Each structure stands twice: as structure tokens, then as C-alpha cells.
Amino acid sequence: MTDRLTATCQCGAVRLSLPATAAGVLACHCSDCQKLHGNFNAFLAAPKAEIVLEGAEALVWYQSSAEARRAFCGTCGARVLKEVTPAGRWLVSAGLIDGPTGRGILRNLWEQSKPDWYDLPRVTPHDTPPA
Ligand SMILES: [Zn+2]
Ligand SMILES: [Zn+2]
Image (cartoon, rainbow, N blue to C red; front, side, top):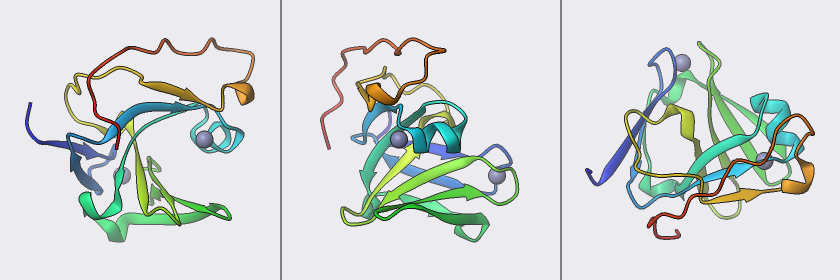
């Protein structure tokens, strides 16, 4: 494994790299994530300062709540990231990661908001240090 994970949107306009120490994979089942992703949101989290973003001009930002905004690719529509405003953390959609991650789902969030049409994904123990 390298010390960085890379991520790209479906059309390739947006490219990111994040530290291999990024937390996750976390699965959020809240109603905002359901509406925006069409499903639960699986993501990795790292401090914004540790994420390298290329193609920032392709991103469209949306204020999804008082404390968070989200960015999607204006060309292909891929949900790229969520920015948690006070903490300065970026949550990068796990589906954008290129190649194997060596990870499983670390934790489910907002389980009480999960719709009735799927079961919670299985949590898999792994060694990723919490961020
Ligand atoms: Zn794209
Ligand atoms: Zn959520």
C-alpha cells in the first residue's frame, strides 16, 4: 500500500488524493445523504489540509445544512465530498477511490434514519487508525 489513496469522479475532471490514514470507510444513513446520494453515503474522512484536490473548478458546491456543504462534479454529477464547516474535515465518497483500499466499513452512522429497503451493511474490523 502507498501512503496516499487516489480518487476520481466518473468523468475524470475531479481528482483527489488523501492520506492512507484517512478514517473510514464510514456509512452514513441520514436523510440528507439518502436524498443526495440516492442511498447511504460511504465515505472516508480526513482534515481538508491533508487532501490534495485537482480540478476544483469542476466542482459545484451546495450548502446542504447549516454546518456542511457538499460538492459534486458539474460535468458527470458524481457526489465528490462533504465539507464539515467548523471542523474543516472533508468526507470523500468511497466510491471514487481508485483501486483496492484494504478496508471495510468501520462504522454505521444515523442507523435510525435508514430506510426500510436495505439492511445495515456489515461492519468489518480493520486497522485504520481513527483520524
Ligand atoms: Zn466528473
Ligand atoms: Zn449523512
